[in-house]
Image 1 (cartoon, helix red, strand yellow):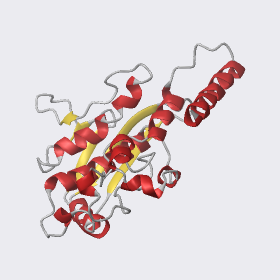
Image 2 (cartoon, helix red, strand yellow):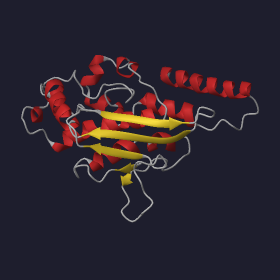
Image 3 (cartoon, helix red, strand yellow):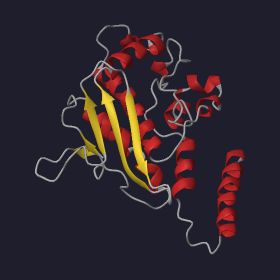
Image 4 (cartoon, one colour):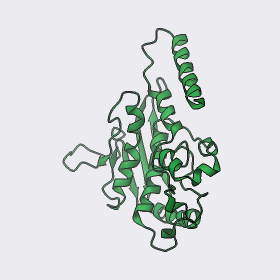
Length: 235
Protein backbone atom coordinates (compact mmCIF):
# COMPACT_ATOMS: atom_id res chain seq x y z
CA UNK A 1 0.00 0.00 0.00
CA UNK A 2 1.13 3.54 -0.75
CA UNK A 3 0.36 6.06 2.00
CA UNK A 4 -0.64 9.60 1.06
CA UNK A 5 2.10 12.04 2.09
CA UNK A 6 -0.58 14.59 3.06
CA UNK A 7 -1.40 12.72 6.27
CA UNK A 8 -0.26 14.33 9.54
CA UNK A 9 3.19 12.88 10.16
CA UNK A 10 2.10 11.53 13.55
CA UNK A 11 -0.53 9.33 11.87
CA UNK A 12 1.76 7.58 9.41
CA UNK A 13 3.44 5.04 11.78
CA UNK A 14 0.03 3.92 13.06
CA UNK A 15 -1.37 3.53 9.53
CA UNK A 16 1.69 1.54 8.52
CA UNK A 17 1.33 -0.69 11.59
CA UNK A 18 -2.35 -1.28 10.84
CA UNK A 19 -1.54 -2.61 7.37
CA UNK A 20 1.56 -4.62 8.20
CA UNK A 21 0.10 -6.23 11.33
CA UNK A 22 -1.51 -8.80 9.02
CA UNK A 23 1.92 -10.14 8.08
CA UNK A 24 2.08 -12.22 11.25
CA UNK A 25 -0.96 -14.22 10.07
CA UNK A 26 0.59 -14.79 6.65
CA UNK A 27 3.94 -15.78 8.14
CA UNK A 28 2.15 -18.56 10.03
CA UNK A 29 1.23 -20.17 6.69
CA UNK A 30 4.62 -19.63 5.07
CA UNK A 31 4.43 -16.19 3.43
CA UNK A 32 6.71 -13.34 4.49
CA UNK A 33 6.29 -9.60 3.93
CA UNK A 34 2.99 -10.00 2.09
CA UNK A 35 1.89 -6.48 2.99
CA UNK A 36 4.13 -3.42 2.88
CA UNK A 37 3.03 0.16 3.52
CA UNK A 38 5.17 3.10 2.43
CA UNK A 39 4.76 6.73 1.45
CA UNK A 40 3.91 7.86 -2.06
CA UNK A 41 7.10 7.60 -4.16
CA UNK A 42 8.63 10.94 -5.09
CA UNK A 43 11.02 9.59 -7.71
CA UNK A 44 8.56 7.64 -9.88
CA UNK A 45 6.99 9.83 -12.60
CA UNK A 46 4.64 6.99 -13.56
CA UNK A 47 3.06 6.82 -10.11
CA UNK A 48 -0.58 7.91 -10.03
CA UNK A 49 -2.67 7.38 -6.87
CA UNK A 50 -5.81 7.43 -9.04
CA UNK A 51 -4.60 4.49 -11.13
CA UNK A 52 -5.99 1.19 -9.83
CA UNK A 53 -2.61 -0.41 -10.48
CA UNK A 54 -1.52 1.20 -7.22
CA UNK A 55 -3.04 0.27 -3.86
CA UNK A 56 -3.31 3.58 -2.02
CA UNK A 57 -4.37 4.89 1.38
CA UNK A 58 -5.60 8.41 0.72
CA UNK A 59 -6.09 11.38 3.01
CA UNK A 60 -9.38 13.28 2.80
CA UNK A 61 -9.19 16.85 4.21
CA UNK A 62 -12.77 16.60 5.39
CA UNK A 63 -14.75 16.83 8.62
CA UNK A 64 -16.21 13.42 7.83
CA UNK A 65 -15.33 10.83 10.47
CA UNK A 66 -14.74 7.81 8.29
CA UNK A 67 -12.21 5.16 7.38
CA UNK A 68 -13.42 3.56 4.15
CA UNK A 69 -12.13 0.63 2.11
CA UNK A 70 -12.80 -0.55 -1.43
CA UNK A 71 -11.37 -3.10 -3.81
CA UNK A 72 -11.63 -4.47 -7.33
CA UNK A 73 -12.04 -8.24 -7.61
CA UNK A 74 -11.97 -10.51 -10.65
CA UNK A 75 -15.37 -12.30 -10.42
CA UNK A 76 -14.02 -15.26 -12.37
CA UNK A 77 -11.29 -16.19 -9.93
CA UNK A 78 -11.80 -14.10 -6.79
CA UNK A 79 -8.38 -12.53 -7.29
CA UNK A 80 -8.10 -9.12 -5.62
CA UNK A 81 -6.81 -6.83 -8.37
CA UNK A 82 -6.62 -3.58 -6.44
CA UNK A 83 -7.46 -2.24 -2.99
CA UNK A 84 -7.61 1.19 -1.43
CA UNK A 85 -8.55 3.13 1.70
CA UNK A 86 -9.76 6.64 2.41
CA UNK A 87 -9.16 8.19 5.83
CA UNK A 88 -10.87 11.47 6.66
CA UNK A 89 -9.24 14.18 8.74
CA UNK A 90 -12.24 14.22 11.07
CA UNK A 91 -11.54 10.66 12.24
CA UNK A 92 -9.27 12.08 14.95
CA UNK A 93 -12.21 13.97 16.46
CA UNK A 94 -14.34 10.85 16.46
CA UNK A 95 -11.60 8.81 18.12
CA UNK A 96 -11.04 11.47 20.78
CA UNK A 97 -14.74 11.52 21.63
CA UNK A 98 -14.95 7.73 21.74
CA UNK A 99 -11.87 7.42 23.94
CA UNK A 100 -13.40 9.81 26.45
CA UNK A 101 -16.80 8.11 26.41
CA UNK A 102 -15.58 4.51 26.50
CA UNK A 103 -12.32 4.52 28.44
CA UNK A 104 -12.10 7.63 30.65
CA UNK A 105 -13.48 5.74 33.65
CA UNK A 106 -10.41 3.51 33.71
CA UNK A 107 -7.85 5.67 31.89
CA UNK A 108 -7.14 9.04 33.51
CA UNK A 109 -5.32 10.25 30.39
CA UNK A 110 -8.65 10.48 28.57
CA UNK A 111 -10.15 13.00 31.02
CA UNK A 112 -8.84 15.96 29.08
CA UNK A 113 -9.41 17.86 25.86
CA UNK A 114 -5.87 16.95 24.77
CA UNK A 115 -6.02 13.19 24.20
CA UNK A 116 -2.51 11.70 23.84
CA UNK A 117 -1.41 11.13 20.24
CA UNK A 118 -0.43 7.55 21.12
CA UNK A 119 -3.98 6.74 22.25
CA UNK A 120 -5.52 8.22 19.09
CA UNK A 121 -2.92 6.35 17.05
CA UNK A 122 -3.74 3.00 18.66
CA UNK A 123 -7.41 3.39 17.71
CA UNK A 124 -6.42 4.42 14.18
CA UNK A 125 -4.25 1.31 13.96
CA UNK A 126 -7.28 -0.84 14.78
CA UNK A 127 -9.42 0.88 12.15
CA UNK A 128 -6.76 0.42 9.48
CA UNK A 129 -6.31 -3.23 10.49
CA UNK A 130 -10.05 -3.76 10.06
CA UNK A 131 -10.18 -2.11 6.65
CA UNK A 132 -7.09 -4.01 5.53
CA UNK A 133 -8.88 -7.20 6.55
CA UNK A 134 -11.88 -6.11 4.50
CA UNK A 135 -9.62 -5.59 1.50
CA UNK A 136 -8.18 -9.08 2.04
CA UNK A 137 -11.66 -10.57 1.78
CA UNK A 138 -12.69 -10.92 5.43
CA UNK A 139 -16.22 -10.05 6.50
CA UNK A 140 -17.46 -8.41 9.69
CA UNK A 141 -17.29 -10.68 12.72
CA UNK A 142 -19.38 -9.34 15.57
CA UNK A 143 -18.99 -12.61 17.43
CA UNK A 144 -15.31 -11.88 18.01
CA UNK A 145 -15.83 -10.04 21.27
CA UNK A 146 -18.88 -12.04 22.39
CA UNK A 147 -16.70 -15.13 22.83
CA UNK A 148 -14.57 -13.53 25.56
CA UNK A 149 -15.77 -13.78 29.20
CA UNK A 150 -16.32 -10.37 30.80
CA UNK A 151 -13.92 -11.06 33.66
CA UNK A 152 -11.13 -11.78 31.15
CA UNK A 153 -11.43 -8.21 29.87
CA UNK A 154 -10.33 -7.03 33.30
CA UNK A 155 -7.27 -9.28 33.33
CA UNK A 156 -3.93 -7.77 32.41
CA UNK A 157 -2.47 -11.19 31.63
CA UNK A 158 -5.32 -12.17 29.32
CA UNK A 159 -5.70 -8.88 27.45
CA UNK A 160 -1.98 -8.49 26.87
CA UNK A 161 -1.84 -11.97 25.34
CA UNK A 162 -5.10 -12.06 23.38
CA UNK A 163 -6.36 -8.47 23.22
CA UNK A 164 -9.97 -7.53 23.92
CA UNK A 165 -11.62 -9.26 20.95
CA UNK A 166 -10.97 -12.39 18.92
CA UNK A 167 -11.25 -10.46 15.67
CA UNK A 168 -10.43 -6.96 14.48
CA UNK A 169 -13.33 -7.45 12.07
CA UNK A 170 -15.49 -6.81 15.12
CA UNK A 171 -16.04 -3.19 16.17
CA UNK A 172 -14.69 -3.74 19.70
CA UNK A 173 -11.96 -1.12 19.52
CA UNK A 174 -12.06 -0.09 23.17
CA UNK A 175 -12.21 -1.98 26.44
CA UNK A 176 -15.53 -0.68 27.74
CA UNK A 177 -15.53 -3.20 30.60
CA UNK A 178 -12.35 -1.95 32.32
CA UNK A 179 -12.81 -0.27 35.69
CA UNK A 180 -10.70 2.22 37.69
CA UNK A 181 -7.45 0.56 38.67
CA UNK A 182 -7.52 -2.04 35.87
CA UNK A 183 -5.18 -0.13 33.58
CA UNK A 184 -2.57 0.04 36.34
CA UNK A 185 -2.74 -3.77 36.46
CA UNK A 186 -1.82 -3.96 32.78
CA UNK A 187 -5.29 -4.27 31.26
CA UNK A 188 -5.30 -3.36 27.56
CA UNK A 189 -7.61 -0.46 26.72
CA UNK A 190 -7.43 -0.49 22.91
CA UNK A 191 -6.99 -3.46 20.57
CA UNK A 192 -3.81 -3.12 18.48
CA UNK A 193 -3.16 -6.73 17.41
CA UNK A 194 -4.90 -9.38 15.36
CA UNK A 195 -7.33 -11.65 17.14
CA UNK A 196 -7.25 -15.43 17.11
CA UNK A 197 -10.05 -15.61 14.55
CA UNK A 198 -8.16 -13.31 12.18
CA UNK A 199 -5.22 -15.71 12.08
CA UNK A 200 -7.59 -18.61 11.46
CA UNK A 201 -9.39 -16.74 8.66
CA UNK A 202 -6.12 -16.00 6.84
CA UNK A 203 -5.17 -19.67 7.17
CA UNK A 204 -8.53 -20.66 5.66
CA UNK A 205 -8.48 -18.12 2.84
CA UNK A 206 -4.83 -18.11 1.80
CA UNK A 207 -3.18 -21.38 2.84
CA UNK A 208 -2.25 -23.18 -0.41
CA UNK A 209 -4.58 -26.05 -1.31
CA UNK A 210 -4.03 -26.26 -5.08
CA UNK A 211 -1.83 -29.34 -4.67
CA UNK A 212 -4.98 -31.34 -4.02
CA UNK A 213 -6.05 -33.50 -6.96
CA UNK A 214 -9.79 -32.84 -6.77
CA UNK A 215 -12.42 -30.60 -5.20
CA UNK A 216 -13.31 -33.45 -2.86
CA UNK A 217 -9.73 -33.59 -1.57
CA UNK A 218 -9.67 -29.82 -1.14
CA UNK A 219 -12.94 -29.96 0.80
CA UNK A 220 -11.50 -32.68 3.03
CA UNK A 221 -8.42 -30.56 3.71
CA UNK A 222 -10.49 -27.51 4.63
CA UNK A 223 -12.64 -29.67 6.91
CA UNK A 224 -9.40 -30.72 8.57
CA UNK A 225 -8.62 -27.03 9.22
CA UNK A 226 -11.88 -26.78 11.19
CA UNK A 227 -11.32 -30.04 13.07
CA UNK A 228 -7.79 -29.02 14.06
CA UNK A 229 -9.09 -25.69 15.35
CA UNK A 230 -11.87 -27.32 17.38
CA UNK A 231 -9.50 -29.83 18.94
CA UNK A 232 -6.99 -27.10 19.76
CA UNK A 233 -9.66 -24.93 21.40
CA UNK A 234 -10.71 -27.83 23.67
CA UNK A 235 -7.17 -28.68 24.74
